[in-house]
Length: 128
Image 1 (cartoon, rainbow, N blue to C red):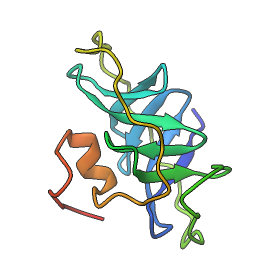
Image 2 (spheres, rainbow, N blue to C red; image 1 turned 45 degrees about the horizontal axis):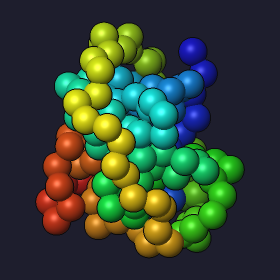
Image 3 (cartoon, rainbow, N blue to C red; image 1 turned 135 degrees about the horizontal axis):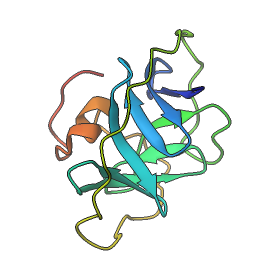
Image 4 (cartoon, rainbow, N blue to C red; image 1 turned 60 degrees about the horizontal axis):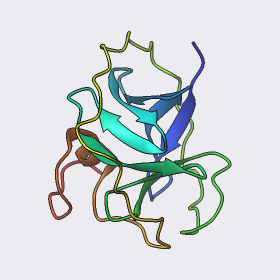
């Protein structure tokens, strides 16, 4: 199964997108995209996806795929990485609440990609 790399605000590969499934850097399915929302396999809405940007709940960009359009400005891609073996995704739950993501901003989020996938709020930093 072929996937597109997801890059961080610094241009480093941090995950993968295959169809509507978001994988971490090790190939484990962590979230999925439905109706422009990023949802966890626990049913939590984590943020939004549109125009090639992955966004936190406030609309700030957390990551992007090649070909992203709009703002914020894209950094130079720092490295290419071989795609890991993508694991089978878990069963999808119905999202817990209706979409309420804010429109995309022209800012990069303080939230790291891996932190977004864990459902942690802005202000909590882990790996970037």
